[in-house]
Length: 404
Image 1 (cartoon, rainbow, N blue to C red):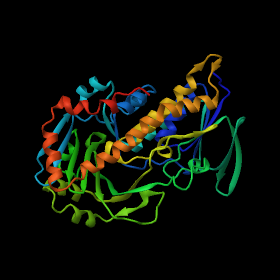
Image 2: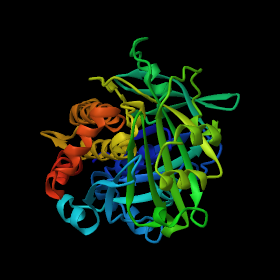
Image 3: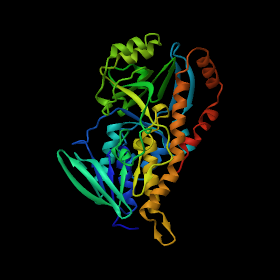
Image 4: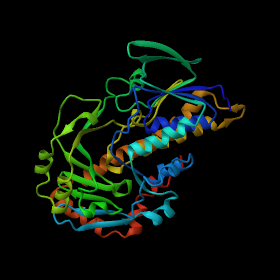
């Protein structure tokens, strides 16, 4: 391995932190840039599917989440009006045996802290906060990165630059992918909240992931931190056409508006929504899958490469898969030794583009299925009820049984 290689990663989210670990393991030194002045434990709950948890386990991250993450016993799908079960799919030990790693739910802040603590143990990784990429010059010899810190701009030299800087990625814009490459509003809005477990109804504290399906809307909830909290996400069709705001978490949501929207739902769902004290309203965007994530010594990762809708709960998981594939590309060896940077990034792109694009499109389709109205919803529900647990689980094999 060429330990002198230096990587700059823009963005210290879950994808960027994981990529720093995988590149450090591959023998690179890493400078991790985060535009926020401090990394706060913001966000809400997160589902870690087996394709992601298996990768994190390799770095000891799951050990750091003991007592914080929960392993749901099942996925329970319920009807909006009757509250009756449409389908139950086993998770827990059955799913772990099938897919080789656990299915977990965790607070995003807890996962971020576990990754940050692990990153701090790596002497080859330096995390710099309050810094963002203002521009870069990509050449066959290396990458010169203009880094902004307040009003100051400095230049850093590296062998490669990874853009893990989210939906509105500056690195992606710098690659010049064109005006047509714009985030696409999905026509749906996510209302996200963390309810206090003491306020939430008892059914919401069960160690299971619950999914309610309704006309033009759906609801997801599961407990966090041993039931001290409940993650609640309500997603509705929404004609919102406001100005894009890159800080989605700062948008407060009016609870009364959501109460009206779910007024016809079963009392359990309404009781859970009423237990929430504060909502955050997040218009959902994605992009059309692209066949190009890298040019020369610069490549994209996570939402910067493939932002996707949350209907398969795979946004973070796909970023983690990216990070694993990136590290593997720099660990691989050609006939004459370690792969050169451009060859390694091309191999990473070739490994990941089709896979992530498939998940993006599948997530779009799943949203349509979840929000079906009227007779189409009835047909959907009948079809789901007819599936055995084995048949239902087999539909996720392509997604969860994956080696990055």
